[in-house]
Image (cartoon, rainbow, N blue to C red; front, side, top):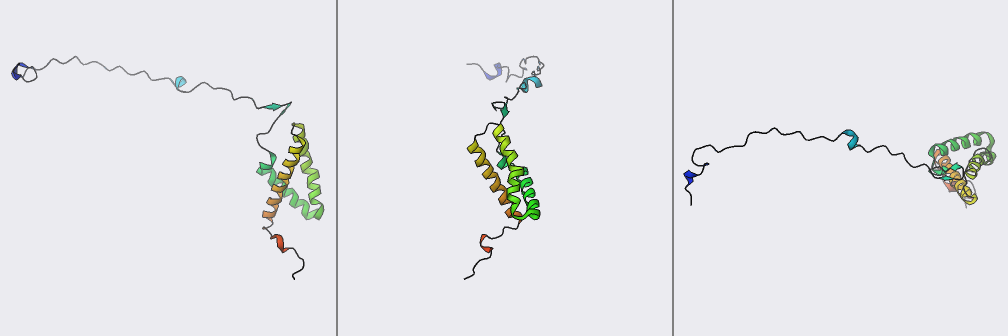
Length: 140
């Protein structure tokens, strides 16, 4: 076994240290390497020559609000004929546009029914949500 004073650490003689080396800077990745190249989104699915809308008209809140305003304006002037006029002037062009886009007739009718129901709810809310049982009749 060796004595402790024989070891350079304990003998008072400084140990040889390696020469200081400069740390090389790590190569940073370029922004072009971090961000992937732009990829064009796929084209919308086309049925025939028409491009289908992403959601049905019965969910378009702006359209429903416009139709409700038109209904209220017609109701003030024309009374009971306002529904027929609204269906003729505003709903028929929507239906013809859907048909031109290639939507089946059954789906067009169902969509118009949903749209009419949404407009009726909007008008009902604007009227203050009157009760269904408050309309005249026999109190007995």
